[in-house]
Amino acid sequence: MSDEGGAERGIEPQRRLTVIGLGNVLMGDDALGPTVIGALDAQYEFPPEVAVLDLGTPGLDLTPYLLGFDAAVIVDTVSAPGAPGTIVLYRRDEILKTPPQPRLSPHDPGLKEALLTVAFAGDGPREVLLVGVVPGKVTTGIGLTAAVRAAVPDAVEEVVRELDRLGAPAYSRSPQSPPDLWWERP
Image (cartoon, rainbow, N blue to C red):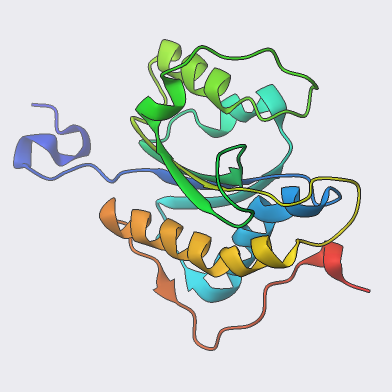
């Protein structure tokens, strides 16, 4: 008798989860994803089944980072109605409800395309949450605008809340330290 993952004994196999920050740290508010990942790393410890990744601007190279995961939480700036700093949450079905749009550059996040690719392969996350923040300024330069910087703690809290909902709670570090945002160092 096979006992893959303990399924025959009624034990749920351990879920694999990923938290991914997307964005270009040299483009103002586009640094949101890496900033949130830095804050998460500084403030929380994660169970071994959770991978926390700052991927920068992977474009279509996002696909391998979604393969093999049961759930994904992605943090990025989003073009959505609302004032800069507004947090908008999108579930997988909302992300995929419209067809992919033409990509304007190889650095555009290919989230929709990556989700479709891993779904086709049968090995991608069934649960996805995009924690999006409306940017104020996405131009060459280092540093978030005040409105987007003020949204970072709320974006961190959304990620932590989702991990808790998925059964992989993050635990506060003790002591906590400020995030190491190397791109903002003088």
